[in-house]
Length: 305
Image (tube, rainbow, N blue to C red; front, side, top):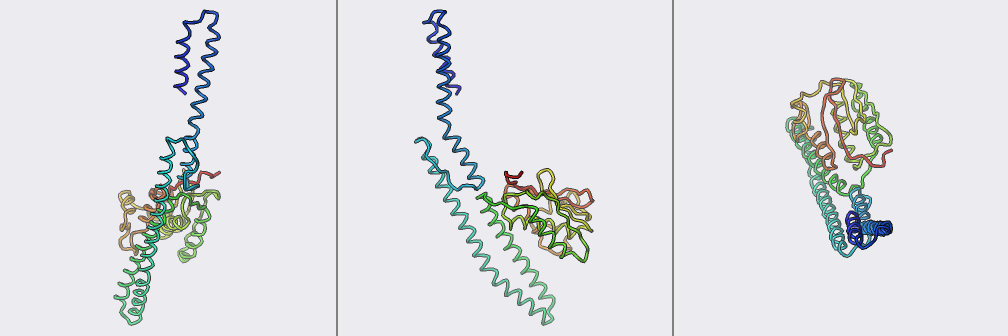
């Protein structure tokens, strides 16, 4: 557009000396029409690129998988190469998921046999051996589930087509955890907008929220709440809290706030890794009730009202 206006001005400066003073108005009119024509040509020439930008946004959001349409000859080869790259990337992701699934399937059968051996050892009175085998089986199972979740999340994050309602997912987890911690009478309250959706697979959202909510129930005294504050899903508990120096450390793989408590130390690491795959994050702060506040930030569906 600036080029069109510049050409119009140059044309006007070129023809002005040839006209008498009385004809200046006509010259200005002609120059104005030339500039308008130039602006129109520039606007029309940029129209394919506006369409391309919209399609690339749709590919990013998972609404389409290819950049369709015909473009100027100078641009079409680039579009063809981009579509080839998108197809190859999708095939590579699917192969990776299939490989991870095959590996997990191959490992779960031996793990099931080892679990049976632990049960036999326990029945035979070999309690120490049984406990040791069961502990290692649980750790290996958790590792398998962890890497499978990462592979699945990578595929979902790459396609961008996942959508999950947060309230429905959190309420289902709350019912389960309320029953699980019934002896301690821990109350789990969910206060999340019903129309809140995130661009995350349901299994992965359940994995992330489940870990955060279970930790809150484990350490909380009586009250756990799930809400939505400043663009983040928050999980609060009224437990003893975590020291400032430990908040970042417990998000690392294998680190637990209490080394005497059972567990693999993978729970919060899984939450962190899965959130990052989807372009989100997790952060630990102090809760107003004295415990821990976990803030889970995930990409929100743009259609949220």
